[in-house]
Length: 302
Image (cartoon, rainbow, N blue to C red; front, side, top):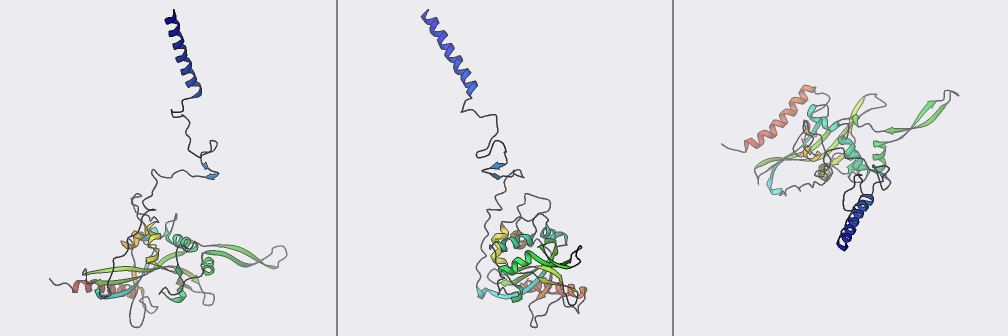
């Protein structure tokens, strides 16, 4: 009888333990309710009182944000046996240059945001294109937006009043970029090389006196200082969203089309002068391009 009583007591303890586990839940087993640490149960998109958007991709892209640029190789002055300064124009309306005006994040927005936050120095074009005058914050703020005073007529009193209107910069107004670069022949490696020195977004404006449209650079960016910033910003790559192409890749690997508008000369004259037709400007641009190519080829003997 004692054995039977002990067996019944053992079964009772096992049954009560199983019932308790089903009632309270085993802490070691995963719960059927999906929760995240620090996320409120009533709103899964709120974390610590702040909105947390969901991941709009299949994986989190960290490679581009964590990329570090490689420093340029050291050059000796004695090894530079030839060099020439070239200015180019990138027309964003060409198909290969369309990433410059990507509606989601165009290049001009990247440069302006970095300049306004103090992460990038920009240079005033008043000082020329030799990066000699840093643009002050007030000029930069007025260029990227601000408030305008506009005179309007009050429809009730028919009197003129001054109204403040917010001015928002339109990224689509930048249709061309000016590039300053240096082509040089390195006799240590016996190769022709090129390094970009500066980038200037071009903006069109109408003069008040003559009433004609002119184009001028908004500011100059010293490209070697902007390389790390551009290396962490994504540029659209045709046909492959996983390419992880950065803006530094676009400039270093020359994923753009351009034409020459000026080459260093004794009179400091530009190719795109008003007295020259468009056809003459393109012919002169191709002539300078071919001249650079021929210089390297003429140094080799077969």
